Length: 217
Image 1: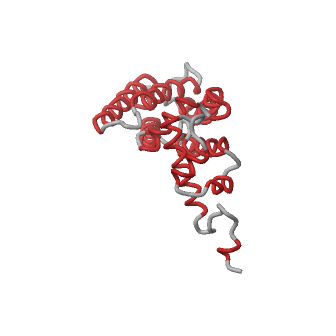
Image 2: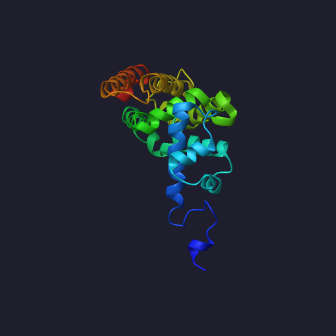
Image 3: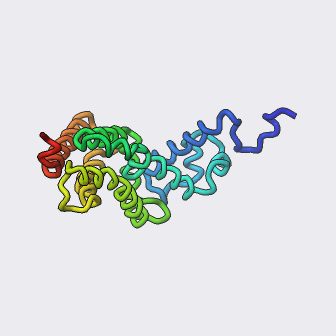
């Protein structure tokens, strides 16, 4: 009996599995952004991905598991998806390290996928846990990123009169606002350029307010 005949209905070929999974994630992202999580059915996702309904259940236990996988892949605030090397960040000047990280974040956020995902989490939060889950994810990322900020403070490169987590918050909160409010799925080229200008202006202001004279000398 051939491998083709052994395959269960909906089960992708071994060399197609990853592609099918990503097709489903892409289809779900597009539909969740357009209609919302609750209004999107598993059948619609399969139709959008052009696969059989049962293919979803080979990759995901249910629609919520699919949303969770999408959330883990995209963020927020995408720090986990970028997998920054925190030790390398801490050993680099804060001006250079922060600009590099934010540049990578903006690249993700301003992409078509990133803009659609912003619309999804605005509407649905982190899936089953809703806005509470979104808050938890952001707090976890904030505490993780605090490590390099603490190292920069210890080296006298950043002001030390505020906790490192507060400095991370002051950096990230305006950036999240730009992502959610200035980067809609249908953003024009002009809007993307405008959003980038806002990010650069915020970075200049943040670094001016937080870097010490030792760091800028």
